[in-house]
Length: 630
Image (cartoon, rainbow, N blue to C red; front, side):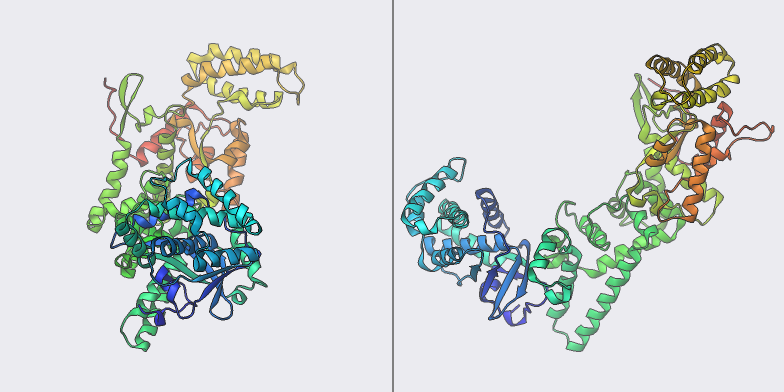
């Protein structure tokens, strides 16, 4: 593309050569509010090596230059002055020290110090540091290593003895950079330097980001600079990618009115997709967190497209799209349409939502694995993924077991598996009781909620603080153990501890002696009562779980029911409580045929009925029962 077609008031990609020769760009200005040049040896070396390693058919893309126009073809650098100064010095070193005369580089003026502006100009135009770069060229095998800094500092001392008026911190860093660049280039042969120069000016691109300050509502350029560096203003990757697609339309040979129509159609499609992704039901179906660093939600689609192209997840998406062959808007639309189709079919929505939100696979992996499958094959694949997960075996106590078998689930030994089973159970519970209704993954992940496993019957006395709490905690055990013939003897220990508690003040802290007896009692009976098994576990957010602590069942019940009602009336701020957890405390899964039901504690029968309900709803996925094998 010719320079005449490159409009500097738009976001674009410019080669270094285009920066050097553009008819509307003569110089950059660095204002006094900016800090001086501070790049060190390591940063300079990395930039040189990155440019040198670019393949012949690839681009090397440098981070954005945020600029705003001044007078006389001068542009003020708001962000990117360290990079632009380094490239200015690289070009000066190539020309002065190695006679590689490409186009003249852009001019650069620092207003931080008048001497800095003069120093930079003297390096470029008068080869001001010729005497000191000659020392480098005359020294064979001068490597940029731990000793190189000592060499630089010695040369700087020599320089300051000769030019005392130029001794300041900004000039020191510029001096260090220029000598570092010269030393690096000196270790290359003539042909290698020519190849490097070509990569620098023709394959190295900057993201040109012009800013119209008045349109941003900023009083001064300095205000914009401060907000940018405070993170209040970000250069969105999606905005930059959008500009590339628009540029592709502008580059076409079509008539002006056709290009205008295409750009409007593209903008409408872009906005429509971004708006639809702001439907939280859709967004959290494909994301297991909102803390993923996306400036705009459409960024997620570009990440997925990059993944489909085999690019690494840590690669910057914008850099991928600077390569023209990677830009295909129809591909983005196809990915979005596929997600919409999955979202609209409730059963598929639930299958994918579980896989993604259980952290078993990412949506990118699911897109990749189903790329060539039919609709029915895709649905079967999602079911098979869950079945394979639930069929996994592990070794426990020197035996091979199915870790997702309900009888093998244990709070202490398989917390993640318990969480997976309870999440899928809650999803299937909604399917069974409210056909067509979706599990609210958006509420499940609201404000990046952290989930935990709650013991329905209290089991840990560690957080009990006073006599009243301890008495309530023991009361639940008494009720539970009344129906357990084998444990009646151990129930006597409750009576003994209660007698000790009665001697304490009602609101006073329990003694260390009583706390130890409570702990010993829990260790003796919890396993026999099955309190760490799935029949005593429910899914609950950590905040609510922490608030109910080791309260008695009846007190937990009130908190859970109140919280569930709030989550219905105030979805924005109240924490979501899963249906299965609410049902536990309403005893919805308990068999009431004999009319014998108590809402004051969680019995062994309640736990057994609850486990059977889980087994019924998840029978498609749970492993078949079988004896443990060696």
